[in-house]
Structure formats: C-alpha cells, structure tokens
Image (tube, rainbow, N blue to C red):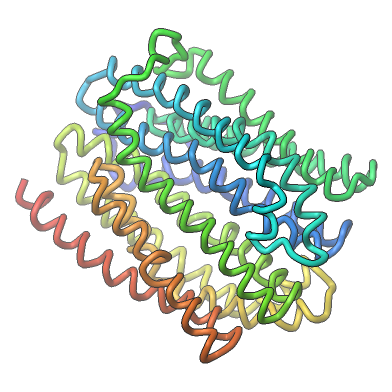
Length: 448
C-alpha cells in the first residue's frame, strides 16, 4: 500500500493508482464504520435498545454541523487537486488556509445555535417519549466536540487531495480505536450510561484532530498551516462555497431524511421501528465502506487529471471506478440478503426489533448492485468543479425521489411503504445520473 504524491496522480496507471487511493480510504471508512457499529452494539447491550434509538435521533444534528467541515473540505480539496495539477501551488496553500478559517467560524456559530434550542431540536428529530432524556444527554455532550470533528473532516479530505491516502486512513483509524476503548471505560467500567457514550465519542474527535494537526505541521505535508493564508479571499470562498454546497446539501438532506424517518416510523411503530431504522442505518454506513472508499479514492485522481487536461485518464478512471464499485456492491448485496437476522441479533436481543429489522434491511439494500454508477457519477462533477450538475445529482436521490416517496407511500402501504422507498429512489436516481454522466463523457472528455 505505497503512498502517493500529488504528481503521481497524473502519471501512474489508473487501475493501480485507484487501488492505492481507494484501499486506504476503504480501510479508514471500514474502521470508522466498525467503530460506529461496535459503539452501537456496546450501547445496545450495556445501556439498552432505547439508547440506540436516542443516538440515532442525535445523528442528524451532529452530522449536519460536522458536514460543514466536510463540505468546506471537499469544496476546497477539489480546488487544491486541480491547482496542484496545474502547478498553482500558491492557490492550493491559500485555499487550505481559507478552509481552516471557514470551518472554525461556521461550526462555532451552529454549535451555539444548537445548544440554545436543544429542547426544541431533540423532539423535532424524533426524540420523543422515553427517547427524549437519553437523546438530550447524548446530544448536549457530543455537540461540544462537533467543531473539532468538523476540522477533522475538512483536514482528512485535504490529506487525500494532496496524495497521502495512508495518512488519511490513519486519521480515521486513531479516533475509531480510541472511541471503543473510551466506551469500555466510560460505559462499562465507570457506568456513566449515555453520558459515557457521549464523552467517548467527543474524546475520539479530539484524538483525530491531534493527529491531523501533527500531519500538517510535519514534513509529510506539501501544505502547511500558515497564518498568512488564513485571511479570507473572496474568489476562493465563492469557489469553495459553490462546490462545498454540494456536500453540505447532501448532508442537509440526510439530516432532513433522519428527521422525517424517525418521526414517521415513531408514529407507525413506536420505539421499535425507530430502533430498527437505527440498526439498518448503521449497516448502510458499514456495509458500503468499499464503495465509499472507491468514491473517495476517485475524487483526487479525477480532479488532478482534469486540472492537468488529461481527459483520457479522467474517462478511464470513471469507468474503472464504476466497475470496481459495482462488483463489490454486488458481493455486499448477496451477503445482506442472506444474513439479515444474524446481523440484527448482534445489535440487540429485543424480540420485537429482531422480528422487524431483517425485512427492512432486505428492502433498504435491494438496489445495492447499481448504486456505484450513481455515487461515482455525482462525485465526478464535484471533482472537476462543476457545481450545478454535482448539486442536482446529489439532491436527486433523496431530495427529488426518496423524501416524496416516504411521505406518500406509507399512506398506502404503512411501514412497508417507508422501506420500499429506498430501492425505488436508488433505481430512479441511477437512471438520472447515467444520463448526465454519459452526456458529459461524450461532449467534454471524448471531444477534448
């Protein structure tokens, strides 16, 4: 798993390069997902199934604020990759400085807002009944650490953009392992309950931040933290904003989806259905880790070569990434169709949850083999700096299809309507992405 420099992104064979980028990204995502998965198992077995639902309620709020860091990171990293490809190192450094400033400013404002309206936001996101108190406890503590998480998310994408995928992987592994150790200490040994789970999570954010800070202060990074680059530059802010808005919109839609799903499922099936969704949601994060890894590995390669005007390589990495991701997605699909009951029992021994979750899991993952095209297609437009189509494709699945479906289908099919909305929206959004991507390849990449 050799490391990659930014210059190698324009010369190494695409298949080999994609593996070098995707494998560390996949391992990092796997470890992070395992952390979330094991964390959920610990919480479910040491605190109770209601605690799983409580954490799921809090996720949309913390995800959205952390997504500010991810949005600024992805938007700026697209600029950095293309700038390095065009030998514009000064622009890359200035962009990085602006990313740091923007991340700190935005996340602190949102954390203050989130703490002021805690009693309104928690119930709004599904923290009702017996779920409210544990959700409020978890939410309040985790929110303190979200600015640190946002800086971690931003920094991780930049590390990958400059061709250091192994360090990006390490940045995801350290806090994941730390979180599990802190879980054992705070929940099992000190018996701090939901507060212990929250402090373990917040502590893991700090570990990640310390590693990323070390990286950018070390000789391993082409980009350095420099006070002269922290001053905001309007053209760079606009470009970061246009591209970052794509990621932020995606995460905002995810948060809205969690809000709607938690409330709809609570009304249809109470705490049991919310817990079932929490378990399925964890599997969505965990099971698809190699697909997300390939997507993350694809971004800097496509961005660098597009900036260097090596369009043949851009076309090659699109097709290669889709093939690799589709193959892995099919393997994941088969596994989840066969073992949903076994997976559910790992999380909880609650008989009602075990009865309901496997069917939901099968429906949610029913269209998994085709999602590679949708993910890579949307990522391409973001990587090459085309904000409008990237935004449209990002919003297509959940904004255009999924949210309307979960509002309409339950009126006719009850809780089943919620679960079948997943594969229907996957199929429809993949069709739309195929049309946009095919048109882009033909008009831009092949013509050039």
